[in-house]
Length: 359
Ligand SMILES: Cc1ncc(COP(=O)(O)O)c(C=O)c1O
Image (cartoon, rainbow, N blue to C red; front, side):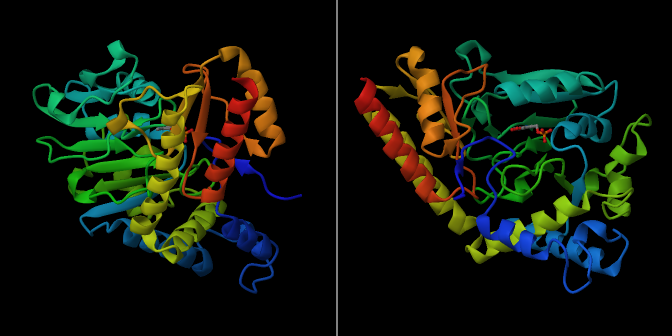
């Protein structure tokens, strides 16, 4: 059966060549006569895979030695607890920017471990824009400000981070490796792997080493950045298969020309979709233009009664997982790195056909 186009927000489309390589190596990795799934994480073979993956990730984002790179369990959500447990104190203050669903999830969890101030919010406008950085107001002696550069559900983003007077922590789950970022502007960047990196469950953390060693005493050892770093992300058995696949995705991205090159493709994919939506009276996207995400494109049909038909017919056309999140409604096309440009062309062609049929 030919592969279909997956517009899901995660687990997202993987580069096809990575899947093929994984398939070819599944029963016999590198002449070992075993699957990589079956070898010890302490074996020299796996340690080589792990080190290479970290080194490629560092190259792709130009991560300096000032930062530790950790591969973790628990996706992005685990970081909602790990960040305040490792960087804040129960009596101290932290700041969070409320830009939508995922920011709120981070805020709710952080409140269990420290005092959370909302530095800025766009909730009163239904998250149609991203609170501008110059509107963020920090609390006294704040340990950090947390923001979500790309809100996967709302489809909004903050493209550029300027210098900030306090440490910046970013949930980059949906934006990582989609465009170049200046890592040196951040104190900590984290995310789940299942959009632009690999299988779900795996998480990544890029943390400035001078922030290590400050964990609250209640922090479980397995969630302590310092111990994870000392144990080279192998405090216990890590998600080895996901890590191996992530390594292949990093290699694939390098072969595509790296983050700079993929960002040109990503911007082209997103722009053509937004241009099409904006040119039609049938579809709409109401996010402030400068805050539109290039990874997640939500759109509404003027007539909501047609939503089910749109989903049914798009599925028949091989365009999967276009249903928007229930909190936003309508449709959402997630167009991560692994989704080829032809998928966006096919979606626009389908949208045009549907519009002509039903307007
Ligand atoms: C921006 C963002 N943060 C956090 C999460 C939660 O990720 P996980 O399921 O890996 O915990 C998601 C999931 O889609 C996300 O998009």
